[in-house]
Image 1: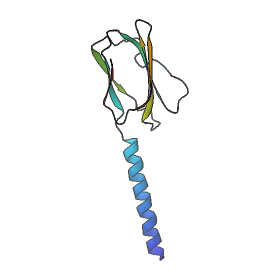
Image 2: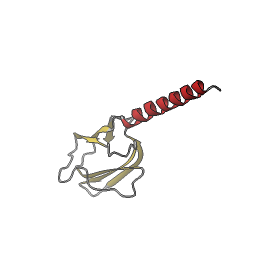
Image 3: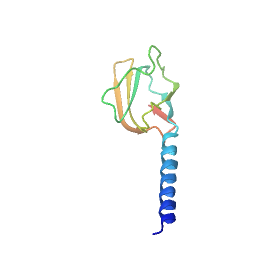
Image 4: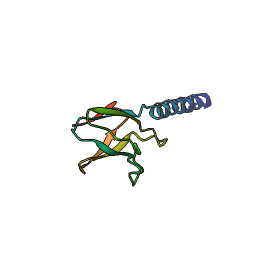
Length: 111
């Protein structure tokens, strides 16, 4: 293979890599969380698959009454799209959902 062909092949590979990486990093990680349970969500956590803890309550002192929704941006700078969700309800119930692709969904509903 000639030198120019090797250079062209290398440049083409690097360009494809940069484009693929940029698209993954630019993925929209905003998700509307909808509460249709009849109970208020008093705490909500979302941790990427690489995390070993729930971190902090995303809503802080806010709550999400039944019939309401809240937009969450899960872009935490890691590039992850797969997140685990944990919702704590006013009646004490806790729901954990694992492996949610926040780059592919726009809405997640609790029923």
